[in-house]
Amino acid sequence: MSAPALAASRLPVMHHAGFTDPAGPQAGIRVGTPEYRQMRRALFLGGFATFSLLYCVQPLLPLYSHEWQVAPAQASTVLSAATGGLALTLILASAVSDRLGRRGLMAGAVLLASLLGLACSMAAGLAQLVWLRALEGIVLAGLPAVAMAYVSEEMEPRGLATAMGLYIAGSAFGGMSGRIATAWLAELWDWRSAMAAQALLSLMIGLVFWKSLPASRAFRPRPLRLDALRAGLRLHLSDAGLPWLYALAFLLMGCFVSLYNYLGYRLAGAPFGFGAGWIGTLSVFYVSGMLGSGWTGRLTARYGVQRVIMVMTLLMLAGLLATLSEALPLLLAGVALATFGYFGAHAGASAWVGRRAREARGLASALYLSAYYAGSSLLGSVSGLVWHLDGWSAVVALLATLLAGCLLIAWRLRRLAASEA
Image (cartoon, rainbow, N blue to C red; front, side, top):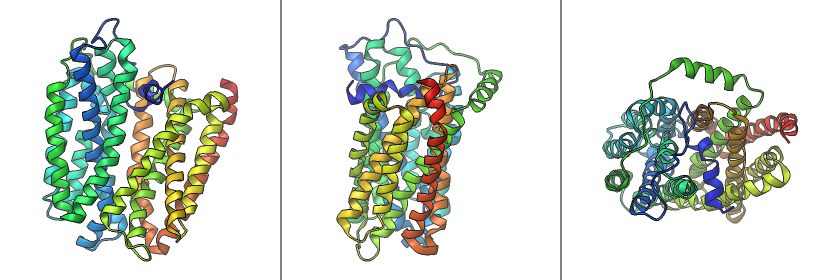
């Protein structure tokens, strides 16, 4: 199976947050038609705009600290506010889409978030910027929460993997290029101009997305059912394995975001002296992460998901420890290795959620993603609190401890994996 198809086979776990499981229509938009090409273009652009807006601020954190004379933990709230808003809103956005529709919610999310991004570039101070970013995260939930549901309703089954593979590719490429472009623009001009340029680009992309995305034909409104939500929550949270997989998502994503949040401060200082542009360019190591995610499926089929998660977490830990080196080649190799390990462990854990959840898989997905972004928000800022103790060494110590917790969770799940074999 190709990497995009493999990734798309996991999509109900990674991207759909509905209360009911999506079921593809027997007939829908056919492969090769103009509507199919429009959908593919729209999904790639929508994923690109969403995740470039979400993560473009990460390499700018040292600039916020410098301008407003705040500690790294305070500056990191600019990113944490957005991912926190996203975590809190995923389930609600999916429920609203079940009632009001998919297409309008997705297009509105990209357009409104772009306008909020433009407002962020004019923020009068850190507090205002954080509040605007929180609103941006809440709005952005409208696309990842329902993208899979929309495609599964409107696309004929044989085109689903390719269409959603393009959404994943756009998301990954947007997250990476948004960081790099914004960082270099900030170095050439300033962070406000960089954020404004990013927002205007996303606004134009949002307009193309809105125009290109085919109208919903198979959608049928469903009433909000709180009793079904409560039953689903009880089912998943009482499961022998799912809560532990949610804990893995929380810890893994928290460690990964913290790595990139505070590595910029380390590289901006002595002996490296990196500017914002080169700090943002570190996101190119996401390519190694994409390889890790793609290989996980083949390794899982051979060795089992629990073993793969343990090995990938160990690789992430080894890469993290290598970043303590003051030899730049070794430090950068460590970043690449940690990124590879993170994406592999995340892919394994998210796929396991899909196999473990027998009912209400959409809600199981939503809980996983909520834990994932909550880890980004909470641990991404909490990790900064230890920076003042001993700088990067203290952050690495904390993250290594959290990754040790991930290993313990994976070890605990070995019996569950054996029973499923």
